[in-house]
Image 1 (cartoon, helix red, strand yellow):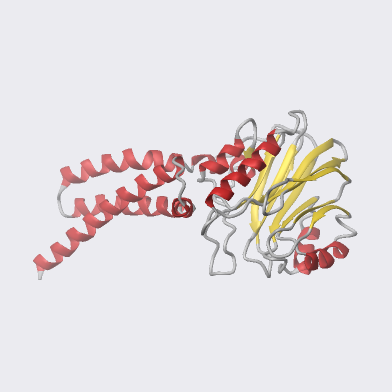
Image 2: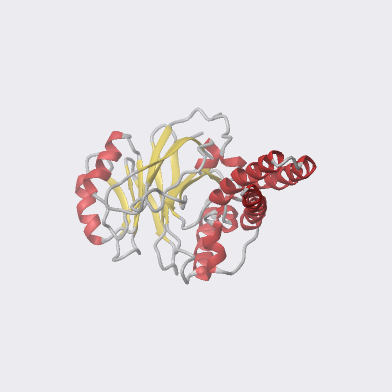
Amino acid sequence: MDRALRVVGTMVVVGAVGGGVVAALAVVLLHHVSLTSTRWAAATSGVPWLLAAAVLALPVGVAGLLLTRRRRTALATAGVAVVLLAPAVWTQGPLLFGDDVTNDGPRLVVLTSNLEYGGADPDALVELVEARDVDVLFVQELTPAAEDALTPLLADVLPHHQLVPAETAVGSGIYARFPLEDAEALPDTFLTTVLATAQVPGHGAVRVGSAHPVAPWPVQRRAWEAELGQVREALHAVPDDLPVVVGGDFNATWDHPELRQLLDEGYRDAAEQSGSGWVRTWPQDRYVPLIGIDHVLVRGAQASYVESLGVPGTDHRAVLAEVVLP
């Protein structure tokens, strides 16, 4: 009986150490390497969970070795754990330590919400806008029916809008407290990304946008990369002296290199800039949200606060961000 328990214990320890090693290596590879595979893109979304597994499994393995009095092996394993976990944890570090806000300009509160084929509860969304004093609302998957329901309800709080409604998931739009000018929808994209310039009192022009590249899975990996590239080109075409705030369903997490390429030349993920951690947004209608694919990106401004909020009728949690303009 004792021998059987020792065998089982050894298997558990070996499994913990082996699983932790594999998970830590996978975190680093998935975060830094981009492959033309839909499965690779899907696996990259799970990096925070793999990291959690590694952080739990490796210490358990070391503790198990100590209990079995294999101190030298435990010490060696602990060294391996540190070497592997350090770069894995480093991939998520930027999300946990925000910048000090140095801007002293007007505060802009933005909310981005994927309506899931227009099915989000319009009354609940408007209540959220009113309760949180939202200045700009970005919506994706805006159908004609959703536009008909939302626009009258928002008339008193966000009376200005640039909308491109369409059936299924194609439509997108911007509702704002301030006048919107110079609107454009990106050409040659399946899902609509719309940009406009908001005239913010006390500051002036701010380029705002609602982005929605297609998902990389199950079969649209190349289209996803292409549409992320088109969003990147449009954002980097904005003059450097114009602040930019873009919200949307990017169908990508912090760990996708393709999303982080958007952050070149001064762009920041609001969750990373504010140190808000893992802002998980999807799927909200199945137990708990697992991954964060909805983001607010900023340039020439500073995000001071980010959180996700539930909206009935859609599978995405909305993302609220407070942005301080220069």
